[in-house]
Length: 104
Figure 1: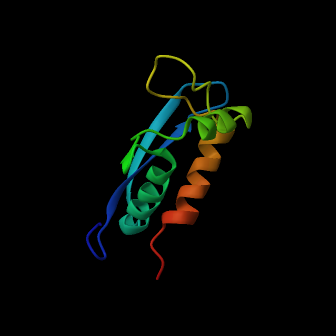
Figure 2 (figure 1 turned 90 degrees about the vertical axis):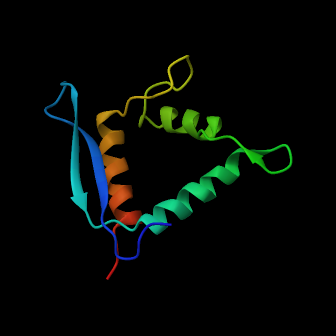
């Protein structure tokens, strides 16, 4: 759990212009790290297997669905990362702010 009233680092990946490379923007923002921790814990439940063990990656089917919806590059392969599409990067930022912005 994060510190009460603490401020966390918030990073976003954005396109600097249409059809261009992604840039990463990091800003300090008042985010609720406790809510992030709770969301990660809930997502870890998706990988539950073998009497209490869990995978520390995201659910494969969920990743495939995000790819099918056009939010990320194809998750199948040897790389350990995916690339946001322009639409996916915008939606991820919207959801992050909606879910994790500290509420007064």
